[in-house]
Length: 377
Image (tube, rainbow, N blue to C red; front, side, top):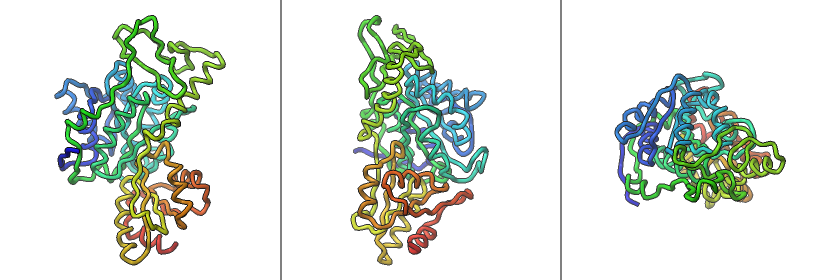
């Protein structure tokens, strides 16, 4: 793969990735610590014939982005935890109507306004169910500057493949980290773009929500001659509201199955020194960088520690976690929350002895703290 080196921040790399992946619309509202994404998009979009619009609030920002998705444009919004809370209703609309959208969440302390300028991973559980109802969320989590770029690109392709919002979680540390990133060339990204499917038959035969039980809707861009209806209500094959029992059941089951039955296309993980590990550290985002440093120190002292890093958080890599936990005696989850992903590790592995190292005061977890915790085990 052809690559290039870029010196930048995580937030700026995410914006660059959006441009390179073909994004033509950004709708949002500034919020710490994600504002640099919008700043960059406001410069980039006009240069490529796209649009960046600052709306009056977070709710309007995501509504505008969804509208662009309805028109067939690759579209994105970016925010932090309080903004996701405000966007929740419209995110549910996008799940129900199956409008592709990329949502970057640069996590900060919460709940409510919390710690605006400090780091947190407190939105992990929220990313699994950002709105009410039954559906399957897709959430990616960058663990390096390079992944701020590559996971944003991947999010656009997944959004168009599965026709739904896809979340990219950064955190304040990695969003504001500044350094060298090795990323694919623009040509590589363009060659890898996966366009959304479109129907090209007669208009009278077009039924966007009439699809296989494990496949997404086929939404042709609005204003292109194909008529259908958008609604947040349960709907029939053409999008019109219905309460017909079997139609409603099949619709909601399909929203689940289109992701659950194709997890192999979504899941991505990193395994670091796990071949002979006696202690498995589960960490993601910026915390995984501290975990790797800690593992090097532990290995130097003869302690066989390794890292399992879920890059796709949701749907969770439950099968692989179960396999590893079956042979590794000790498992430690290290998170900037009070065990939001540890709950998932326990559920996936069936083990109730999963240890935790958590911090929720807005400060990062150091390699030294991880080393000491592992030694306690």
